[in-house]
Length: 214
Image (cartoon, rainbow, N blue to C red; front, side):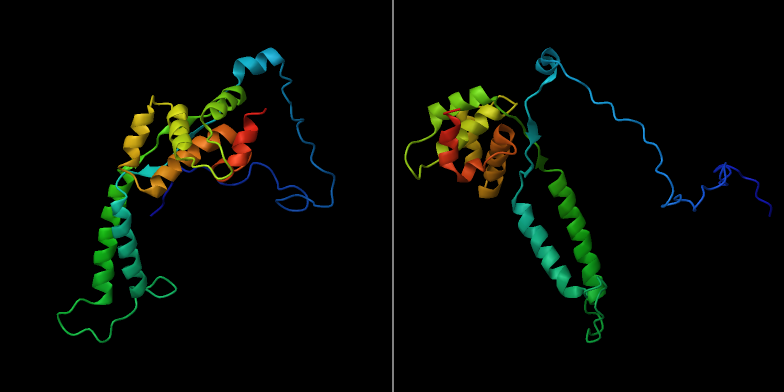
């Protein structure tokens, strides 16, 4: 049958390939590049356009699903080889579940759990404090001493940087619901939007105190 459908169009090149092949002649002159235009900002334009850094934390509010997910994956790993193919179960008796049928069952469960986990994700947005506000905040809330307990400071910083209005009591309520990993995600995100590219604040109380001197 003669098919004259030209939906995809003519794939033939409109012009002959360049000298030296499709990628040009590596020894020939360089192809002129259009100059990159760099915007020259005025101070007024910068002050008008500048925004504080923002970032979403990523938390699964049903962290108990992670245990089921990990258990399924662990069992699946015992049923497949290094190439990801199901290991033949030659000793399975008639009527018994084979590796292949068990892998299919586990894979279906894994998809259901993964879907439920995806539907349980929470992405709270945090916005950093400007340098002056952070210095004032640190001066008010950083505890004294060489090895201070930063728990209260972290709670206050999470509340302060949350774009959705949170009180300190709101964050404390989250502590009663979340495990360590989820709370650390909130704390790390709040710290990051305040000192992105700087020191590792959660592990350096001395550096936190130094910020109050700036």
